[in-house]
Length: 76
Image 1 (cartoon, rainbow, N blue to C red):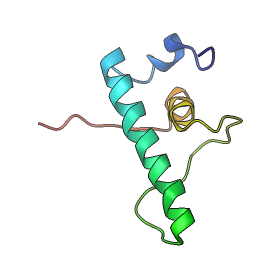
Image 2 (tube, rainbow, N blue to C red):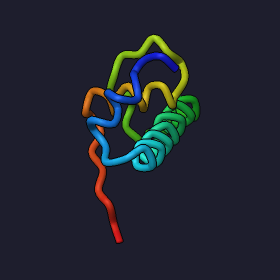
Image 3 (cartoon, helix red, strand yellow):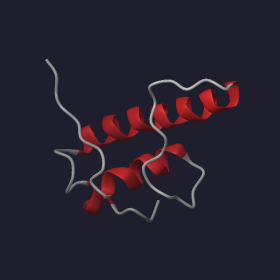
Image 4 (cartoon, rainbow, N blue to C red):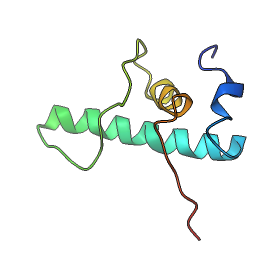
């Protein structure tokens, strides 16, 4: 993966671990959104927040993270 660079991604998250968790959860949400479109139902999952040339959901999630579009909160 060349873009977005890890250094740019770490400006918007606390650690590499948080980056992996946030990106994986968002990629699952994008995947669920696309599957719901095929079924004709609309759930709580938001569509991708960026225009991406990639069809890979994880890449889309990382692009959203690099642009600062994702906010997360630690829950205990």
